[in-house]
Image (tube, rainbow, N blue to C red; front, top):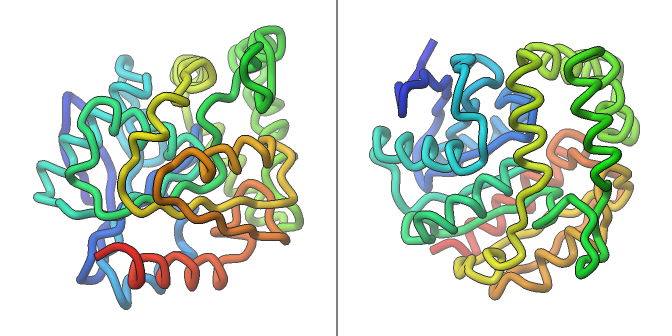
Length: 266
C-alpha cells in the first residue's frame, strides 16, 4: 500500500500515468476511492489521488484535523513526490484545502485549478447570501457525529446524489463511517466555519468551476460566486448531477477536465 509520511502522518496515495500531474483532493469524510471513474485521464496525464489524514486508507492521527494542517500536509506531499506545475482538482472540502493552500503558500506550484462543488463559506453570515446552515444546524451535526454516526452518514448521502445505484451509496456510507467520530467532529467543524472569500480572488491560475445543478447540499449561487470572483475562471454546469458530477456524469466530467487542461493549463 503506497504511503507517504508527512508531518507525522502516513498518507495513502496512488499515482498512474505520465504527463501533466493532476492531483485529486476529496471531500470531508470521503476518500480518493471516489475518483475511480477518473482513471481514463491517466491515459493522457499523471493522475495522483491522495487521502487526507484521518480519511480513507491514511493514518487516523489524533491531531491535525484542520484545513491549515491538511494544506501543510499537501505541501509536504508535493515536496516528497517532487511535484510542481500541477493541476489541482478539489471536490467539496478538497477545494477548501486548495484555497487554504493558496493562503499559506501561493500558487507557484499550480498550472491550473478545478473546483468541484464548493463555495468559499458554508456558514450563514449577514454579509453573505449563500450560507447553507447556521450554528444551530452545525451544533446538531456535531451532536450526531458523537451519538449516531450512521444517521449522520445517511443525512449526507441523501443530499449528495441525484440518482445513483445503491452500491455507490453504500460506498459513501462505508467511507463516512470509517472516519473515527473524534476526527469527524474536528474536521467537520473546522471546515464549516472557515471563510475563503478573500482568498478566491488570489487564485491567479486558469480555473474551471464545476457546478452540479441538481444540488441540494450547497447553494448553486455559492458555486457561481467562485466562478465570478476568480480572475481567470470558467463555469461548467452539470445538469444531471448533484454534489458529485465526477461520479454522476463521469464521462462528460473527464472530457471537460481533459479539454480544460489541454487548452488552458500550459
